[in-house]
Length: 177
Image: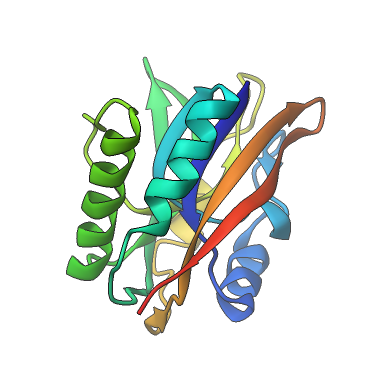
């Protein structure tokens, strides 16, 4: 089985800005440079034939290059427990349209449509129950912002879970127009 997702890889300057912002939450598992991405569409576990169909359908996605800009930060929680910290992405219609086109391509390949709201963000850290308070970190980076940067491709990634967290391998890169 292959655990797949489609993402955008921020340019080096954006990643460095994010890496510089990280820290200050005891027990947080901070993302490495290699892990920083903006998930456009999580796919999940699929077998090899479906993975091949997904790769082929994504190759047909023709879309203008979106621009991404960092805007603020936040956290995701489940039942009151914060499990991740993230950097927000400013609203961008081209990014939303890219998500929609990718979702339609995946549906043609046989993947169930995405029913969740698209909330563009870049995960900065994952937190277990023993992690320290996140409020000081969130207050410190509340004003996180960057100029928009144009993204020239989207990437199909395979995720492998391990003891040190997830590692991501680019399976295919799809240029945007």
